Structure formats: structure tokens, C-alpha cells
Image (cartoon, rainbow, N blue to C red):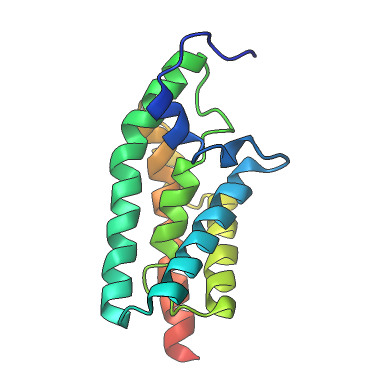
Length: 161
């Protein structure tokens, strides 16, 4: 399917996470990787306290959700297809959710990335059912659920390690 001639620029930029969603194969994986790498770089460069890092990561995830829902709704409508693969702001929001309690080390960031991708692909209950929500909410909320699953499993692993 070809893209519409008239596009709402901000929505397409946000939805594709500034073009990352155009990378193939597996744009969703690339969106998750981009979010994890960006989070890791910011955390390592700024050296925030653990509490500040957790709060900032949660705020970033919520901001991605808040801007992602309307952006994904616009792109879905303009593209004329439900949940286009190149829309990856949902993976960004979900991945950031998975990283909320993550210490800024490469191994932990990779673990959070792996956990999120597993839950995003398998979509255990009720994540799959959230896809039935209308428009951008359906696009975003299943990935937020996957991010929450990954966050919980990560917290358990980190606690018992």
C-alpha cells in the first residue's frame, strides 16, 4: 500500500520514532532497540541517581504513550490500515516501561530488551485483547501491557539475583 500524499508530519515522525520504523526487517524490534539504546546512552551520560533514573524513565514511557496514542491514530487513519508495522512508538513506550527499574548497565538493558520483545511477540492475556481497542489506543496499549509484564519479570529476576 502506498502512503497518502497528504500526511500529518508530526504524527508520522512520532509514530515511526523519527524514521526508525522504516528499518527492515522487524521494525518493531528496531523501535525497541532504539529506545533501549537511547535510554542507556542518556543514563550513562547523565549519571542520575537511581530514583531519578526510575522516575525519568517512567515519565518518558508515559510521555511516549500520551503522544503515541493520537499520533498512531492519525497515521492509522491516513494510511488506511490498522496497526501499520512502521508505527513503532508503541514499542518505544513499552520498552521504556520495561526499563523503569533497570540499572544502567548493558547486561540489564539487554535483559529488559529481551523480556520486552518476548512479551510483545507472545502477547499473553490480556495484552492481546488490548489490541481490540480503537485506533491508537489499540496500537499502544498491548505494548504497554507487554512492557509491564517485562518490568515485573525483570524486577523479580533483579530482586532474586
